[in-house]
Length: 117
Length: 110
Image (tube, rainbow over all chains, first blue to last red):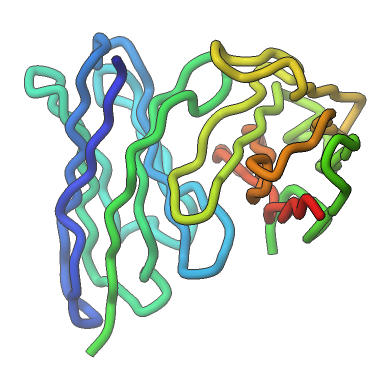
């Protein structure tokens, strides 16, 4: 069974940092692109970033470029999102998702990030 | 404002059929496959259609998808109260070099 479990969310002050993790199991993690997608309270889905199988290709939505860094550790079946210089509008539930067949076929349950003073 | 355009809401009675539209451009829908996601209240999104019209294992054939040019459509027949959810279309955008979603459509089964 494919399973994605996010962790690392919480309350952080504006300008602060957080590192999200996503533990993957039930599939060969190193064979898939992986994504982070977020959802602000009461809002729709917003794609944040993705990374290729060996971590050499990374793409970001414009609003997080230079502040967020996506990475992965294939030996530990883990995906990460380092978030720096956090702003109030980064407040959201952050999901990790696996990419397959031009879609995001499995999603984690999400972790809530709240940026507030 | 989302790159892909969906109606904010649709509604229909149990047992009826509903369609949800998703409009884009030549750099996104016109250039790649479309997928659809169902988000039940308080839960994570779930893939219901991929590659325009294919259903993942476990998704009933009441769900269908189609694409024409720069638009796509999700269809749900035999509506059930359990289908009440937010539905999102998604694809990639070659100009933005990003994955993009529609703003979401809230389905109400009256």
